[in-house]
Length: 513
Image (cartoon, rainbow, N blue to C red; front, side, top):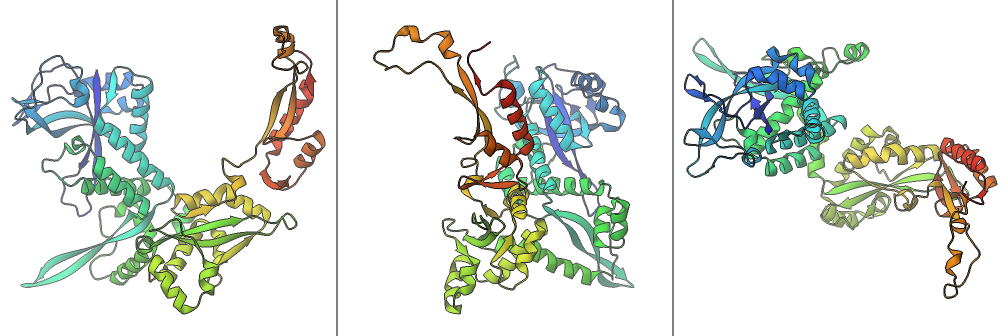
């Protein structure tokens, strides 16, 4: 049995912007020969360099095997050891036959051959799949599983654009003819910028296995290591992303170009003596974009109010706020703006004294993701937004998910929820023998002939629909229709297929053929 282990290794350089890398090493059950390299002994149970190519081919990772010279490296690990032997991981210990004691264990350095993951998010996902579903003689260690989970969570935040361009300020002292003067440099980079990221860091710091930091001789706070890993991965991925030439032209000589270009990854964007005003402007902008979410004591909510049956184009999104300390309370902004000044001050005890500023910032943040919401900001006192039927459908299908995912609350009509939604379907209804009383039922009535009589029915939810009604719905031009007192989403292509099936198999089958 072989066990995968993963480490995050910060680069040991003098660069102001520190990089890092993921290293993968494999723990085996076969004890090798101790190899001395200066004062550090090779790990007796690690997979050695000459064994890696065959091992990766066993995992069907031939593309990695072809690049062995570039991605194999040596890493020093600091592991609990007893009597000059490293203790096995909990996963490997179950398969060891020799006696293992943990008494008087101390940290010792061990040299291991490892694989550098050039695309860690993708590669760890591949390895996780292979070890769980295809290869039986290989298992993941707890450190590998943790880093796999953490990087996949970062991937989800990355796909949802939870990051912003950033500037990092660095003071430098320099000597000019015996006088010390202070100068500075400004570096351009990317940073995570959402409350979701902060929650992930807190959760990960509480659950990170100690083995995840085995490459560090001096213990560090888990949160520090996790933030470093997350920031390095974010910048590496975005700087390697290719943008269209038209977009690249638009961002020339801007902060976005400095953040995107690989050439600015380790050198200052603005040399000493220039760019301080830009840095101060960025600080103010960043505080508005990121800071208000932490300061706000409420959650902005969007409630879709359905159109009445006699005016199907008159939909509306109502803006609400929900105090974080009591999510059961809801206050519509229309009610808030209608209050006298004294009543508003009382409300501020629940939603924060900077409520009016934060509500506009929060609305602006939501409108960045759903541009239609800008129309609700045409006034200094936003209350609601009018939609037509097609816009309401787009809100339900696309925008609601984006807003929920970004931390806003979305309230939709009950008929759109999974519990309340009515779906189009074909029902199979039994049309068996004549009814008889249960007391006087003769066993001879339960025959195969009686059991196989059935008929097909077109239905929406639990209600049967006749052919004429079905055709009217198919020919409707709107994505939502008001049918028997409730709005229903229609898939017309699927409805046509169901109708064709219904015609082909007949409305009633007297017996199974």
